[in-house]
Length: 385
Image 1: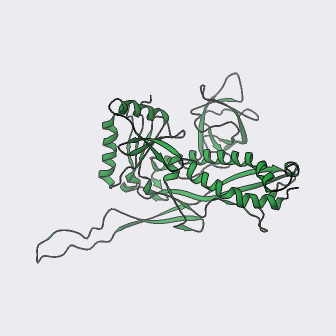
Image 2: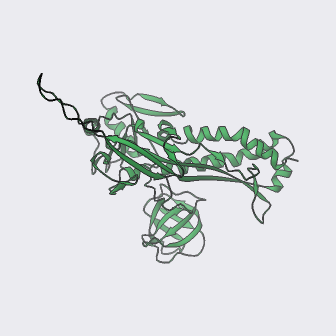
Image 3: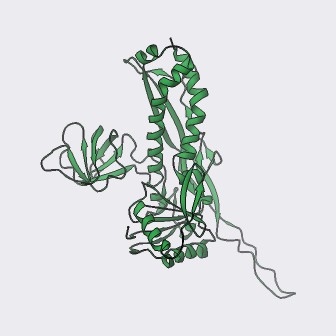
């Protein structure tokens, strides 16, 4: 019979490196372009000192005149708490005993569970990259009149069957905890939530279980109108380029935005990510005049190319939106890479109290920081094709 010690060895030696590679490089094309680093992590926080502007001690003058007055660089310290990412797999004692013997039998047993973990973690991580850290998945707009547990929502983009969610009212008081989404109708923008009906849920927000205000500081936060970012007040260099209500996307409009970003910040756009409908609109605009080439990206992704810049469509990018990014300006700061959570005796698999089930949990403590917010851009309100 396979023992929990054998299972621990398989999880450490066989799965950890493979899962880490998939989550870091194959989960999302934007994430695959971002450098991951343990630098600037102090305890539970990221504290990063950045310089902005230029050194003022320069100038021209006469041959015998005064030299330029010296001036220090401008510095600011960002402070962000590391976010806690978890992924859990479970296996029953009965399944362990029925699997046979040897590591190969255990690998066969765990493959389905690990595949599900990677898929769920990849979706969740990809979604958070576009979020604002609040964890909001969607907003309930009303209840289906004929079905008390069927709810109309503003968007189903971030919602999937099997998700365990919390629901908050407009005062951020929890109205329902650890409920399961049992059905998603993407055409009608409706979901079914398990349990008793939620009373008067209009404008209530949906978050992943236990995740409210605890998610990664994604693009939604970078491009928001908030007065604070990364723990400091936004100054001009921390405000990215934004243009709203674009309408029909033209090549001239896109190039003007890229040029404006480079002119104001010196940053060069090297990655474009947009919604599916925006990519179709861009392709329709550009393909009429020339052939649209493709490029291969790290992680096995394929993208269209606009003047050498990869254009990627992402399922979690907001509708009608295009982000113009320099991925060299982003760093995923982490305390460590993905690791199994171990008990004091070094065990990974632990019995769930009161149940004949063992669980194992992957952890990563991390957050995303953009070193040059003014070097990024966003076009929104684009008419999709």
